[in-house]
Image (tube, rainbow over all chains, first blue to last red; front, side):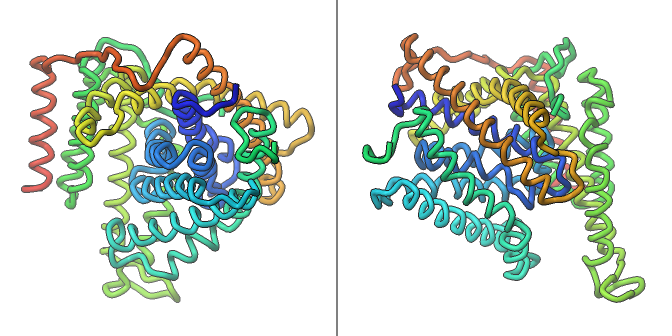
Length: 182
Length: 263
């Protein structure tokens, strides 16, 4: 019943893309919530963790695009670096879940999450420094915008995402990773 | 969250409404290049004039077309002020501590604000005049060349189409969950940042669970009806562009070339 078929992966990806539009609106009551709580990253990372790298990559590319087209957030000027960042999150989260097998779900999830979050920030920083804001984006700006300002978001992601995956497994909406942890 | 801020499709019979979705998206991409390549105030004036004509031809009221700009007023003011004060310290008018307002900064801030406004308005016109399903089919038609790189474009288009249709449903679901949490005592209107963040968390988990339940039901229903991703399916044939669509493509292309070469 909860086998991950291609159709199911596609629909989950679609839902995660839709959540990329809906979730930032839920955080809208908080000023500057987008850069502090990073609500759009949650569905992208989740999609990569659950469905795999291809689906995570698609969700990371399309989610911010749809959100920008429909709600105007992020503004078009910030869209390309955001798409790069989210695409790397989805891609690396999926790849890591494929590569890492420690026989503990939480360990797999945390390793994949931390690597994906770090890789996404590094690649987005490199892309900004070389392509989107050449000469204006330095290491201090990178540290501030991706780690200091976003610290509450990083904490929320590390707390919520493994719990969400586990809750979905418990609810039998996605298959369990290891049979002994059902 | 009661309504989408902007971009909801409004049916109509205007020239822009009648254009094929793939042509509209292609024109949108050309205009995006034009906006990005614009460097002078004269160039922005031409683009704003063109956007005004576009809104007039689409018969969308100006309030709808400019919808999200009002919400971003403070964002624009902040961007403008930051650029004025910090962008060009070498030719500053006056120096007060770390603030060095300059003409260069004023111009840079104006560039950014003008670009964002233009892109928002053009985006709004595209989404307001094109039904979501048509938008997806237009995207699928434009994604077709990716088939050469073995990208499953039909599957991608299906995902985009389902995502589009899920957005209003999930907005409603999120609104319902939000009201339920308020009834249980959650405080979304608290002035404290931590309280607000704490109140958001019980909102996030039920939204995800509800969304995944819907995804599970839909995928089961699709599979029960024999939907398979590995089989070819019928695609909408958009056909050759009509006369007015060629004209739209030519106008956008000429505008883009003008912005790159002359303006």
